[in-house]
Image (cartoon, rainbow, N blue to C red; front, side):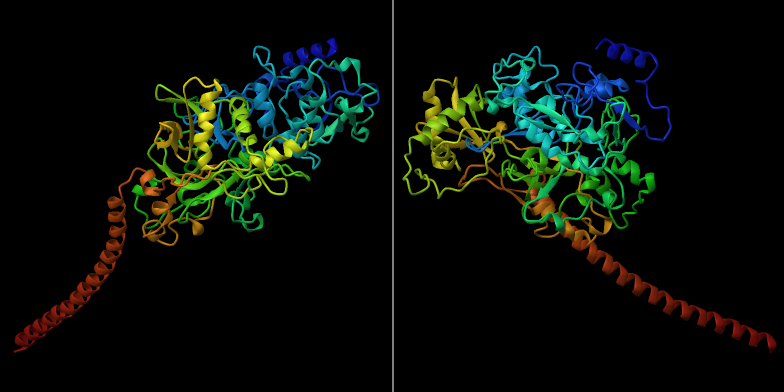
Length: 634
């Protein structure tokens, strides 16, 4: 093992961790693989351990620098609010935006009872790793890092061009708690059998498998020997210019009511660009996010500004320079480029969008991982912090919480679920029918929300799954009363959903506005449409007409619980405008047309008059000169 560290030291002294020398020739990655102990992996030489990219890639690249990147760390300036993780639990009708970046409207993981182990279990499926490596100081009785190992940065998740790279396998291995084996299995370098989730927390891998208990088979790697040459090196087909398919694993969006075959590609992708042409980074992996004023108050990004304006105003990389003929200049200062060019065309109501990270899309196989929750509305046109209107994805939080001194905090799921379970368990279902309870509609089967880790299936589990298909509004006061009586809630139990706070007052359910019930939103920048398909291509009426979705689209808070009187608001109200002002703008558009038409008519009349009187003047001048000539000849 010592020779590995000596080699790494010499590599550092030799400048192997420096920035690239400027050559555009890609490096050939014919390299040895190392495990977590620094031992070179030689198939067939003994117990085979998974690849450690910390040591394998760290032979030439500074792993500690890489893991400070945007995808692996939250220690950078948070910048503009982006897509959060969403804590969902269909049994308790919970959808809660979570982020360690401190974006306004999100909750920090510790606020909702999520440790780093909890984050890894719930959200590692759509990540590029970097979880659990700084776990030593985190007290967590449920954590099993000693058995599972950390989730190192998975370099191949983005940079591997091989078709064997399988991020669905990555998700499956993480669900089995095979954390340090997941990258090896996903890369196709080897096959991994066994489940760390079945092993006791005190299991020691040096003891090997138990031959008398095959169910407790620990994770084991079987490498593809055909991938190794005579020097036990492997040729990895890696690229700095990451293909879009790698980004799509975590950043796909799907608008309900459409089919993927009916959805056009982003115009940049259709032109042959890839995501990293705009979203660039150096070794520190600080990804350029590409929004206006991204570098404001921060160190200038070395790649330079790569926003819509910075490319299209200067024609960078062949970008067409827009003329915006006939558009009032004020639009360019008050409306973002994406408002007209990105996302689906606005309708009477925003549609629902599902994303990879929020709704667990893109995990292929026989089991369906995708979920309906969370409910995300898009596009909703809102004013950003700079006062510019942008299209947004909007999520209304839904969670059980506690009210103290007018402030609301979410209750951990491990407090809420036993109460909800006990409430539904009180309803004994008929053996020949689904569970029914007061105020509920016929049971609606819900997708399985838990990660597909093998569990013991019992009739009781099956019955409870049906009972929790969906909570009705009439259940809320009964569950709130149960929470208050449980002794685990220090304060007033509340339920936040549908843009309002719900609590008991003298035994009755009352609803009120509260900051904790306000929606969380994040701007969307894709999929970009061409100029001919943009808002305004059909004229001012695309936005300034009765019923146009840009201003008059109706936004209704969506919740996982059936709520009767959920308040709806028009888009212009969410933007902070008055209806009279919007209607005045719309009227001015038509008056502008009438003014232009009238001006043209008046201009034609004036032109004809000038022509008429011009001819008359020429005639008088001609007569004058003719008469004057005759008088001189006499």
